[in-house]
Amino acid sequence: MTDSIKDLEWRYAVKKFDVHRLLPEEKVLRLKKAFNLTATSYGLQPITLLVIKNKKIQEQLVAHSYGQKQVAQASHLLVICIHNEIDEKYIQKYFDQVKKVRGTEDKILNPFRDALVNDFSKKEVVEIMQWAKNQAYLALGNLLAVCAMEKIDSCPMEGFRPEAYEQTLQLTDKGLQPVLVLPVGYRSKDDIFSNFKKVRKELKESVIDID
Image (cartoon, rainbow, N blue to C red; front, side, top):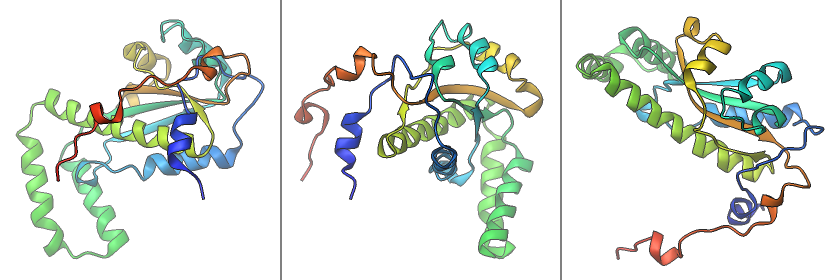
């Protein structure tokens, strides 16, 4: 049995990866599946994961990540993106999938589908994009937890230039916006940060029990 708390204590934001160690494909596949299983609002999954295993591209992206070398050092670079358009067509595709997987009849699905289409049609684009970004952070948290359990090192990043990533990775044609970056791999033995004690609030300061 794995000890989830010890796993979370083990993880930290890696500052230097071992460039000679690559994640085995089965580990990468688990991260892909974990991403896909992330809970999202309404189940709409307005997010897509890019899995980059190309050193040339990773090295190019360092300049767009404020010089953070982990982007190039990591075994793989994960980029969490959101979809530019969450419209009736996108929502219908989700309900088509529900019908395919569960065999649910249209007469049961249609009221919920129509309510979602109506709700999203009234939202401003900026509101929809913020909602989608919230889902991206859910996915990041899920990936960090799974990385810890799988003993995969990681370093969550908000510090990058989305427009430059978008151009380098040719995301406009895919209808995607990069939101978060997560280099993954194995920590270098000489990363001094691996020995630092975690700095967190006392439990009684961060958790309130209401009986």
